[in-house]
Image 1 (spheres, protein in one colour):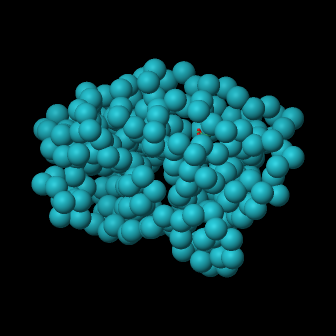
Image 2: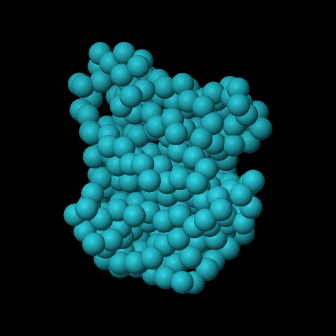
Image 3: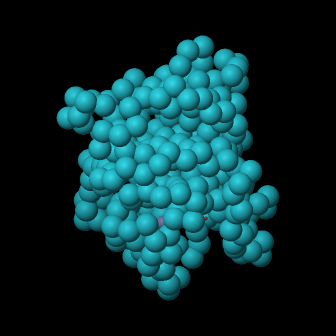
Length: 278
Ligand SMILES: O=C(O)C(=O)C[C@H](O)C(=O)CO
Ligand SMILES: [Zn+2]
């Protein structure tokens, strides 16, 4: 298992960052490695996120001394979405099949979570996000078949997309985790534009379902001083609460967003007027 630490920044810190330094601090290039658990611990609200890619044997997230606890979910909750081949999640001995786009909310105090793939040649890719939690809520499987996506954006503004809310008060309870899956329509390339910040929550983005040569130009920074990261398939980025987070692709793509902070009100965003973007 690999876990990398990323510390937090103020807007002032990144003002003079080179491209290389910006990438070192905000971009995670390796998420899914066959047979491995690859995680990142960001000090932005202490979110842990990354990929679990089982092949011929089950994998689990084993973190205890790193978090000063006896087991991973002793004081945390976990959201999972499979973006790969079919597999299973086994929670305290009970197995649930997980096809592509199926998700799971796994509450605090769940002791044993294992991940498996049905086919080593087409492994499941479990994208996992965990945040601190102070109350135990029930474990809930969130099947893609049960989600009605929110349709938003328009073709003429190149941002027609479907937002699937997985961990959201309408679907299941959580302490502070929110998680979802946004699919851009063919011909659309902008996500969340007009863009927003939310001082009260941080967010991470995983971009995927992209051809090898497709790139997303992901924008970050304060509205009046934006910067960008050029991102490839299955790469992730950290968005501090003060930062905008939007992106434009050289083709359409999909992304998983996950947030935590003061509230679980999805619409609590500070929209940025176009005239303020620089
Ligand atoms: O396409 C979108 O718009 C999104 O998916 C936006 C994210 O959900 C988000 O940034 C929530 O704060
Ligand atoms: Zn946001």
